[in-house]
Length: 153
Image (tube, rainbow, N blue to C red; front, side, top):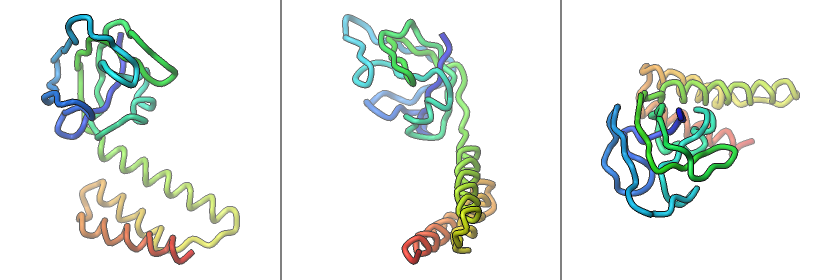
């Protein structure tokens, strides 16, 4: 069964002390160990959107899992997981966050509220950072300015 999972940027999972994953690798929990949702086992999700809610990093993975031994609306837990494909989607996640922030500011304008230009500028710097056109220092300064704008409001 195909499913989705996120890894940290170094290809490690968010919990445990397992080594980094590689594409094509399959791991199985051996023995009679009890596989339990939210406690122990290889977790994954039915969609990338669901997996994003549990993401420890920005590496989106298409995985193949054994029959889930537990599940709820947004996740599965299985004894076996094979990493089929992994892609770092940090840029796309940052761009999406900028889109959401812009939409939130647009809603404020539509409601007749004033939007501080420092917030708009921070989104622009964040978008440039996602595209590799701004430095970490510029991003940090823009974040601080937007925080000041929020406190001033």
